[in-house]
Image (cartoon, rainbow, N blue to C red):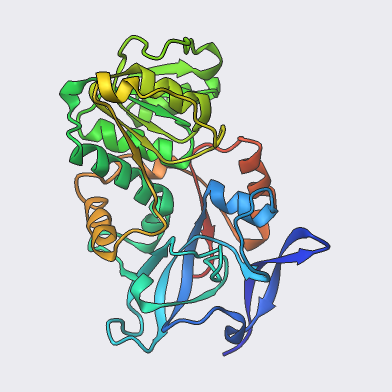
Length: 330
């Protein structure tokens, strides 16, 4: 096979140095399935990893990108045939296994998900880990009794990938959704996705009591820290908050009172290590009842590998709205 392009991170003098370079298949991590990559995407985790701001990568050099979609180029796993359209998210891609920011990816067969009927490769990466995470959050909340009648759902980090998709999914399921954001310029965008109310983060009155007035039937939180603590204090009885991120802080200060007096549930969402059965079930739901109605509106930009450094920096500065696709092939 001829050499191909990859966006790969190196550790140089203790610092992460990421750049586009040419490599060959032998440079990739082992696996039974070789994928000719067509699309990837950018997640906040990718920005942390490829810039070295977060200690995500566990070996170097390493191709970044936690998601990839494309066609099977070659397979030693008889579940997959040449030309079949597939996707891979999580499983350590871009952490300790070469990821999706390359024209080819090589992965274990158990990680590979056939493209769900009714979905194309571009849409798969418009969703990507963000869509899977939002889907897992909604699915977990429903499993714990979430219904529209419990009250509105608060979504923090509302303009991010997971937040945008969660708003769209929840509104489509009949929930009243309140977006919590610091981006006043995104008001029209959030209402277009289905938010019925918007709360500005800098005007938020969190209070300090162990229990505050019950405001929310549930919540999807990508911030952590004081925001997640506030959500637990303001959930109504029986409500669920799905914790999916730490953009504000990894710290969490709270009491047990919301849990024992209001029976609320704090649900941890991990999209990296999800059983194959559940992963496939959520991807099927992403083509049916959880399918976002405004996916093309949520995709705000498409870049090539050469454009990654500038865009990753924007993610770290909190300047990105919606989803960014990475074009790898035809």
